[in-house]
Image 1 (cartoon, one colour):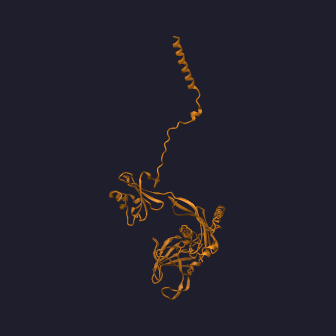
Image 2: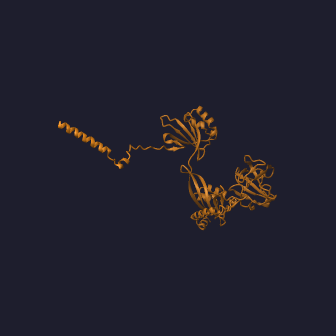
Image 3: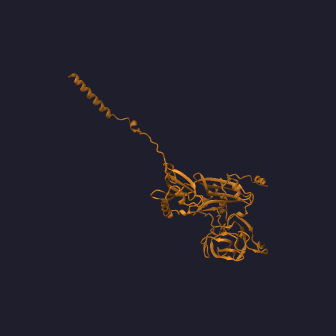
Length: 425
């Protein structure tokens, strides 16, 4: 009996002790420490065109000459019935008849022993693409690749042409076209001189690490005949435009030339030897020699007051009235831009026609003429007032931007002009 009692007493002691320990305060440090389960790494899908391309087999290709969507898809096992449905369904999104040779496409197929095409992606441009779902839904939608920009600088010296200067310096020659637009009202790019030089700050745009072109141009210094010509990109009243270092707009009433980057073959004269008739007579215009089909632009806002053919003379021509003072005439055109007719309103820089050799001409060129108050004047000597400068309300903000960009321009070291010119002689 005493032995049994001692057993019960021992058991009671164990119970009491266990209760005491269960009521004891827990180690807060341990309580705050989470119990971790096994960590599972989630692999993110690789996306292209918004699709998980690592789940498919990709076939990249280019559209061949005279190749249609039906030929591309049918060769990958897509039935003609499905192709017909795609063509009809896609009209509101993308007309498959507009697929062009040389453009990229991608076909995404299953990774089975017998691959099945699931998506066809056509790249409309370096940025835009159209996705055709080859599943039961036959969904069709458009998307855009991410465009990234990198700020660049460029500089150089002109020896023969601005285009060649940029090519020689490993720069995108499209920059020369952009500069011609920026300075269209202030520098005659047909008159670029050997020794002219430039430096600028701009953005270059990239898709998939491949350059797709020029973005914004923020600041330019173009030295022409030894004189600096500045251009700063500035936003005033929600409109972006280019202004010089004094805040004057680079846009004037008229463009300096009605087409881009081609040779002047004949100037304004009161007694030019006519190249066809071989007699001396006035030539009250400027001839711009350019390939047939080169776009011709109106140099200013106005209304088309004549669209006709002049036998034995100017061929197809247009006449535009800009205001009570000025009219301009564009002659020897091979054709007119769509929608151009007598009475049409045109805006500065609009394409109105194309260079040709209609009428009395030895080759394709534009005969460009300007009349002021009914009297023919030399287009190359026409002056135009600038449009609104930077407003006084914005001048402080403009000055801060201009000074900052000018400092950045000055960090771009000029090439040694004297050495370059010496080496080229």
